Image (cartoon, rainbow, N blue to C red; front, side):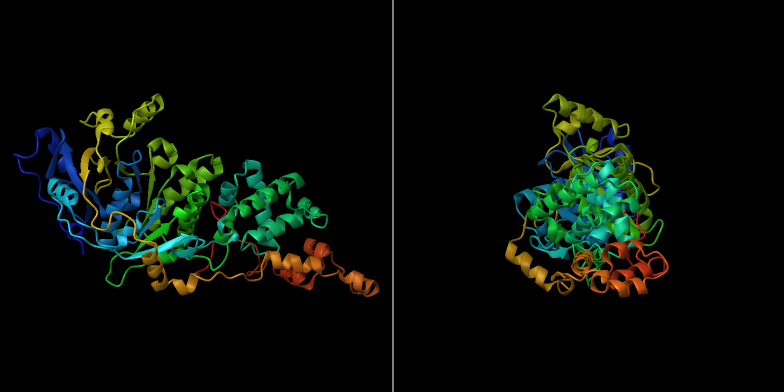
Length: 524
């Protein structure tokens, strides 16, 4: 196990090594409990290895932000933090957008640069790999397939990936409600497309009046959006077996936390989809985990890379749901770190929930860059540093840091030279990834897609079956029940649909409880 994950920080910097002005900063990071060592304090361009910059382990569920321009070291920061969390028995989820985080599974390679960094920062560096589970959206790429049913994904998140406006989002919610109440299981995209197509058909159009406020034109827009979305090759992301997010909370046999790496290079051209899918994972965790309050360490730390994609063109309802989820999931023991280029990429309501900050260098080449820089500086506590000058002059692997102390107060702003990751700083080859996936205990559960009977099959079968009145009109009139049949019976006239309709309203009925995002809660 990594020495730096368990070794306490030094008692404090020697009097001859640290200037008086920097002492209050160093003392702000002298925690007594378990903590992650991020690096060493920088003052006037000099690195002070005896003054470690740290973050208390219990404060990782107070969320955070890792920001900085491209090429400043954000990915290596994620790797460094993930290693130390794993070493202290905390599972981690990482979204690997560029494909260069898979190396965390293998020991790193030493060299002059690593040796120099370790000497400058006082790091006791040793090459070490960590337990990793590789995941892939829909199995596209190298990893255990991660799928969600359309029902559990819900109308709000799906509206985000379909690019629907607010009115269309509300209409999609009505369609989900209709499918829920009529026992039409929405497993994959063809199920939802079948329900919308039915509602816009001559047979189904009367149903629109029964679900209130859904026009034929809007339903048609949704149908066309679904068809175009499916044509982009996204059908594989939705279906069964659905990924159980409890599998993100596992420990390795040696007690280290499992690092779940979602491999995303194969879907880089679908950024809206993968960012929204990450939100589904987080929302699903929120539903299922019990309240734990303030724990000694998080149950999971979730890194949300390319966070700006999640918030771009998001509806007010979507942003409200994100804010609520981030605010409340802390009590479930989950920490969420958003990773993006500048803090202004994150709405202020969400940014206000992020207690830990690692800000890498920013560029100020254009007026917009300069405006972003000034806005970033204003988000930090008062500091003896000239932050505008410092943030534009930081080198790769350096950052300005402020975290929450053990009593929950913000620590002083500290310019920091970060430690080097101990695992491989780069990707492993595809063959090695595939071998790891085949050896995974999850492979047997998720590798093979399943297409069971759901809305598409039920609607297809019902519409293909001739109405009972066509087979025996007289007999049908004689046997007609006194009560008015349900809406589905009026349209499809099938015994299967009658049975489904009768189950509505019972404890096992088809109405689905939905969350802030409209995602469906599932029993585990």
